Image (cartoon, rainbow, N blue to C red):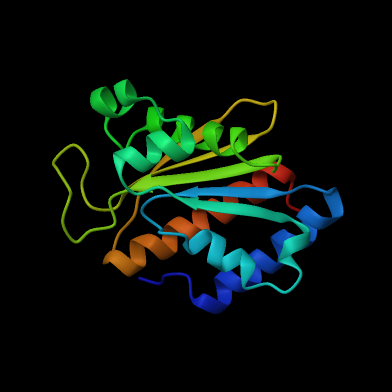
Amino acid sequence: MSFPTDAELRDHAEALGQRFRAARLSLVTAESCTGGWIAKTVTDIAGSSDWFDCGMVAYSYEAKQAMLGVRPETLEHHGAVSRETVVEMVSGALTHAGANIAVAVTGIAGPGGGAPDKPVGTVWIGWKRRGGYAHAQLFQFDGDRDAVRRQTVAAALRGLDALIGKP
């Protein structure tokens, strides 16, 4: 089983950044299980300040509520790792930032924390353009904590490709 390398993630982010720059778009990230890895990947690219606005790492329920406007009822009824939560995260990121495109991730990277209905590797990713509707997708990734997080970063970048149009 092969997982994205740092070089592959960097190359992907660099190509994505060129499209963001050309389209005069900017990005905000709202991350939980990746702990800022998406933001790190894109800011490793020289010139990313032209298209990267900010990144928010909201790990706890309280942080998701305070930083991203996730409703307590959403967390109580659906949990942090849910479609409902990631949709509120991605929408909240756009509300609290100057960017016009957002990506949000929430999941269970492991090794603990999984449950029968949400095993380790369960990740929700959401994407949204300012003024548009959020799109969320459920992933079931394999591997250890690092592998789950790497796959999450790669999937988040692929979703951004789709949102802005990959050449």
